[in-house]
Length: 187
Image 1 (cartoon, helix red, strand yellow):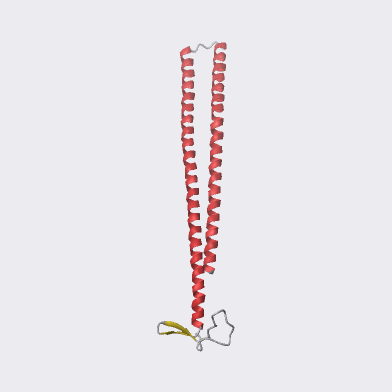
Image 2: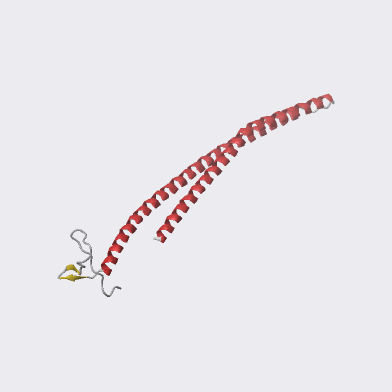
């Protein structure tokens, strides 16, 4: 009986630890999703700010060069602007690809957490069913053990295939039944 109680306590402890683990995984997943969302929200603004800064710097450099009388060829300047724009577009494209990949990872992690939670629930339900079954088996075995103890202490024997008992006629009656005398050499 103590082993059953210990098993029940261990099972409850395991279910509680699994529940905490599921909650921690869910919280970690939400934090990762929030961090990803913050990064995705901040990226367009940073890229636009970088593009504006680069463009304003290029404009300022050009104005200074013309004012000082430098005769740089316009082709070099145009190539620099085109290269900068191409670079910014490439960075933007890579950022959008990274964002799509992160969305895919978050979606997969969400399914994984849901699957683990469902599996833990299934294990908990199966454990509870098994525990209920064995509790009823143990209760039935306890009743049978008490009956066997009573048979062992009673003065009974087989008489031509039937159970015979030495009864105490002076004891209190229980309907049609009388108490059985105890066995003289009780084990």
